[in-house]
Length: 570
Ligand code: DPX
Ligand code: MG
Image (cartoon, rainbow, N blue to C red):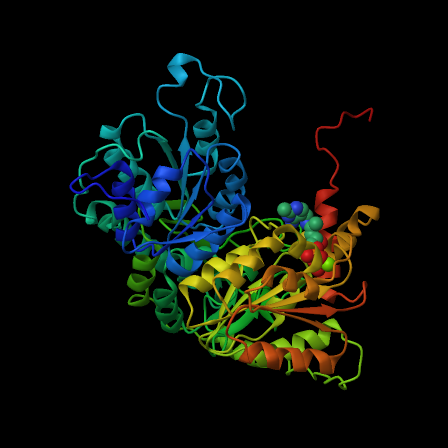
């Protein structure tokens, strides 16, 4: 605990107070000499709990996961050696629309003018490079030059992050964290949202009515930004007013209830679930809410909608031939809900197209474990209290195919796609939601990237269930483009968990080679509350989903397009 000098309020205290005021209760840290005084100040705040991480990559990804649960998060690292690793999770927060506040300690303010060469730096006395790099991966980067500038710059960065749903960067020199500072003003100046422009909102609603006028088969396509904009309630209200089919992009799974009668599945081109692809192709109008069309969501550009779209983004609305800025998604959807005409034509058609529930084979206890059997058993684990994390790899496809019961939450990092994300992110998330059962589906290759963070789950007694699917390598890469580089060293994963326990931990590490062993392991995991349970599920190297093979084929084709500017002779 830092020794507080009575009456002295510092830059570090200012930052701590702002973090607490925006609703942060846990801040993720890795110490280093440039941030130690700052860490003392944050630690001294009664509403903030410090959470140590094993390295800065994991620290930033833990904060990324915490932002999913809490709406905003903080990651505190040291200069360069720490911050440059934390840039990766910050990139994730940018790509995934999450306000992560990246805070880095930095050199003493006297050093640059004295041309001092400092440790942990590039070895030349220009110490602006980290700030310049941070500008590219945040919506607002600030480097505090004097204590007097701290309140203004800290408030500016945090406000920008919260408004834009993007990360920000705050750099605080080591000799300023403990420097005297004024106390913060009302937090509303930082937190209060920018409301829609009334005229733009009205005009956009009018344009929407014109867009839908005369259309017979409207469909709503929901993308990941709908959830990030906090518009799920208004989306439901709007969808029910429309009465039409609602399809979700894969990264939006969980943002609209799957038991709702208007839910028609995940639209993911040729690897869609239910009959979502048929419904989207049948539509004559498409209202895209927070949709992201990238090479992954369009299956290597094979599933780009070919009708004019109405696009509702986080802070603007676009139609063929019209654009309206400063229209907030939630306000637009609830406003439009009062104006649209009910049209359930697509639901009538969906009843005809909806596939019958698949016949699911239940394996015998002694049968060798298969991908299908893992999915069947995971499906049975899901309840209204489940938060399911799926990592990059076949876990994406297996996760997307699962049926989420009401209340279950789903987390995927499809834009950034960092293998290993799920381990630290689920850790960060679960600290904020101890009431939920966090389950992780992760491949062996992904797990090896961030495995250390299981030791924090042990340390903080977080009862996460990790299903590690061991197919002995990078199977998704095998399907995209195979080579010897897709093989990895096998580990004894269950034993590794024992190593993390050391003498005082309570994690369980289990191995399932058969269907029966998996069922027993899941039972054990569900009653184990003293720490994480890792279940290594071994499957055959070639046992992957058919969706992965199809998707991999088209993504590989998109990657392999020849350069367009080849000369005629070539
Ligand atoms: C890579 C990927 O074992 O899952 O189901 O076997 O594919 P599957 P694993 O976790 O392997 C993951 C592997 C290597 N992607 O197949 S998806 C490239 C990649 C990435 N992120 C980072 N490095 C490389 N996505 C940080
Ligand atoms: Mg694998």
